[in-house]
Image 1 (cartoon, helix red, strand yellow):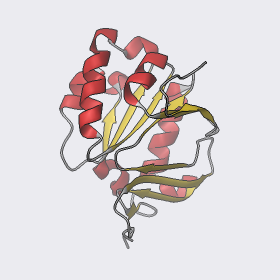
Image 2 (cartoon, rainbow, N blue to C red):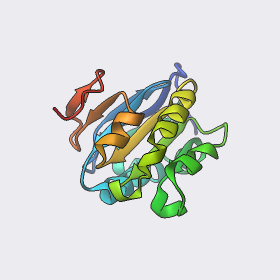
Image 3 (tube, rainbow, N blue to C red):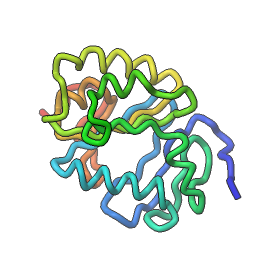
Image 4 (cartoon, rainbow, N blue to C red):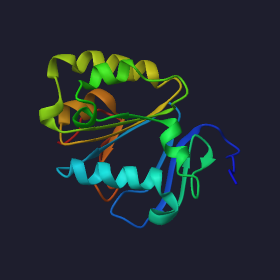
Length: 168
């Protein structure tokens, strides 16, 4: 059975993952970057967490719904932006986000990024943050700066937050 969260401001809540992935609590309007050189691995872990949450975490909530035992929840509320999967640019994939998807996931390597589009990506992310949360996994400082409020490492330890002066 689906259990709805009392507060609808929590878009993503990953509690005690059993795989190497940080605990995450993202509220509407927030964005988080995960800086790693292991983009493909961490992206696959994220997909595992949203598609088989009961197997890989104590609890996963997406858009206020308890996803454990309901593998469709993660896919239904998440807009997946992975250029290697869609064979398109980050900006083009973002432009096509369905309205009902309130979690935007971006998984991109440096080589996937069209740096001429970073300003447009930042602008569209700012627009979407009114109703969404954004999770970005990347090895690109520039993408993380353009899209996120704070950045953590694979263990969930802050690299820097708030000031956008990442990676000093």
